[in-house]
Length: 420
Ligand code: NAP
Image (cartoon, rainbow, N blue to C red; front, side, top):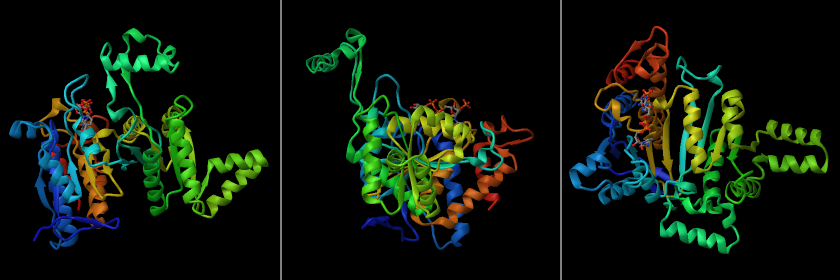
């Protein structure tokens, strides 16, 4: 009999027949979800010879929910996602410059899914924007609940904007706004608690998976008390709680100041040879260059919400584009996790059975890993890589490869299954 996944004492309990809620998504959502569900089911069947099976439970969100219930995000959907702990979703439409709030952001906020986890790696044969794409293999942890995504914004001429500007004048900061009469205002909160819980997840991941470094990516040179403090708090946390497992660039700087650069380099080399994780930092714009030029210097990344949004798509593009980039939104304390395609609804391709379903399929791989069903996860990953290597791909890859065979979205899913 199918049953719910449970979570207690930071441990997920998954039966052989777990119920997993899914949101099909808008636009291309149905196409990619159908392909993905078929692949995931076949991989589970193949790996466990029928002893394990997922019971899928559709929950409504987005346009489908609105058409059926008049609500974009029915409370029943949130209740089910909350009580089942693990879910998966396709993309959802978000209007720009007004209208309802992003459903993705609402889901993350409601379930407090503070860590957005985006692995970025190259699959053999995938058309890549950089030379030597095999050098890219990192996991990006993006803070998911703070920053400019908090949604505290006041439009130009509104009472809210005027009151904030008045307050800034009282605080002696008003002169910093170049055009106060015609400014919209947005607020960017970054907390110590939020920064540390995100960073801690990244560091725990690095420890568990024997990664070499965690890089804090920030723009603290400009936003000193938000992004700068993200860097300060996370370095301090690493030193205070993981002193025996890490070597930080803060420590490096201290040694350099007390002794010299040779002593600092020697200390870092010694830490590396002892298997300690190097905690370092880089400014966001420099990082955007370096992931293209020196990607192998990065391993696990910890950053804030907006940086993480830009960086993850840019990094994904370097190794094949967002059609193939998976993601997860996780609260490591409550156990809630939603795995998701990272691209949008690509409305012009909706219903054409055309687009690449890899993003949601690989999100399914992350979900299977999270559940401990690693055999099925590995099977899908290898079979997907084989499809790309054999140049049997969807339009987005086909147009960038020589001599490739063009497959529809559903055919690409079947190709993966035939490679098992
Ligand atoms: P988008 O839907 O990601 O599409 C932009 C382009 O990316 C597409 O035109 C296509 O490129 C490529 N692409 C996206 N998915 C692909 C796939 N599976 N396979 C191959 N190529 C793919 O971005 P958008 O047009 O900016 O946004 C559309 C809607 O999606 C908006 O309402 C936005 O808010 C929403 N959105 C939702 C999420 C989410 O639910 N997580 C994320 C981002 C955006 P080509 O045209 O070059 O073929």
